[in-house]
Image (cartoon, rainbow, N blue to C red; front, side, top):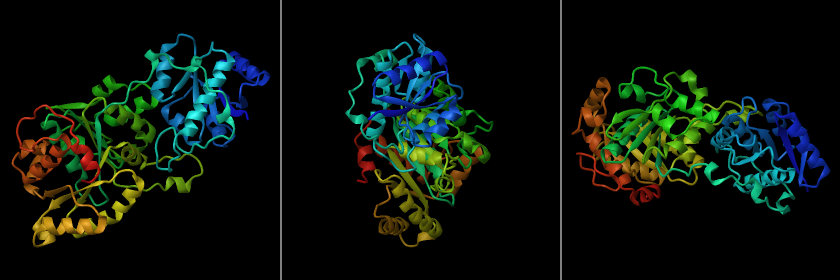
Length: 453
């Protein structure tokens, strides 16, 4: 059975030649629509009439977000570039197009590349609506799996292959509504990881208005994450450029500030943000991401087309994270909110057991032994023990915020800092005693943490 495809090729001569060859020869593909531009291509993809698209690298307004929408519609993408145009090929690969072929290739090679791309997309697991990336909603197309595999002509040369995935460990810090201290934990944890000798990048991905820049004394509106996401969406972001957008706080700690105004949330789109996190893995040993509190995905219920997703940034971070820290405050109301939201979090990340961190622990809200009482309550209602119980040191935290300093600088002897440092030490596998950071080593303790051990 022939594979239905779409074309959006800017060179009319090349497109006409390919369409004609596909019609004359039995190459396993059939062009069901020749699209004039990107909006026409996206509209045709949503109809479900095709399983692959052949498009030019210079197609106007082509970006990562558009490619993600094609992937969500179950349409695999093959890029066409002019012979020897390495810049165009590099941009397509940075956008996430795995299959790129030159316009001087034969029609048979182009058809084989399209079939292979569609087969690869269909072979990926179908994920839920909250998953981010170019592989959502794909369904196998009956019949094309029996076609001959693509030949070596469509394979990318070694020097043009996408860079290998980074080895940095991504820690998403999440907490429910009610300000349980998620940002405080993320900032302090990143600082302690860096102090223990592990190069760390702290990313502010809160789509409801980040505050990490202010907490570390960056009062001006730095480009930060919004600029990185824009570059990723255009296929121009790489590790050196990401490093330039980060603010170096010294001691192995870098910060990628977030949006300062909540109205800018459309700049944090899921697909580009996923690419930013992938590149961040290559920039630091640990990537700590402060994400938004809301897990709802109402847009998918309210619209029958691709709609802006304010919480898509949070979903993207949680999907990309190796470890998820779920933060709750110790107050009774906060604990009830946390227990309810924790169930939603487990459904959103079924393959990960979130690690619970209880913040603002004090005897006045728990009575008796607050550590025992709160830990017992968390275990009873969530089935897991907290990995950290952080005392409420209001004086030290206020001093750090007022000075725009890290907690380790404003109050080195704070009991809150000691508790967070112990948590950081479990990730890097080193003793958590304050002092100069040594050389970090990636220990198996991180895996034990992720497994809830």
